[in-house]
Length: 140
Image 1 (cartoon, rainbow, N blue to C red):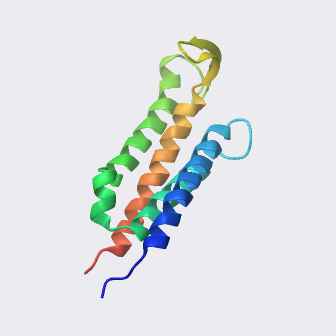
Image 2 (image 1 turned 60 degrees about the vertical axis):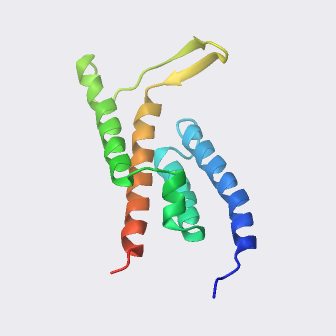
Image 3 (image 1 turned 90 degrees about the horizontal axis):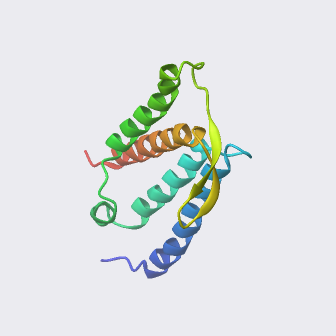
């Protein structure tokens, strides 16, 4: 017997959009307010896990064809790379720099190198969280 889960799938579409929006807000608010790469990554990862719980694994893989082990590895590489890069500029380890830049179509924006480090942390958390959940859910 097939379970009719139309309501669940309809509600999850809206909820996942809200969860992803909140995760991105927490990620970008992190260097000025509570939040950052870790909590933003947890929220974004929980949205992905919610998709896996609602839909088939194959359907989610078709929409998001990522190997989350590689996502976690890329995150570690990005975080450590941004930390080690300070050594090449003869400044203390994990030193950040920032500035205001005039970007085309966007205007003047404040950019900081801490965002690169936080992106690495977020990718590591997302990749690890989803990999753990997928490994737990595998059939023996």
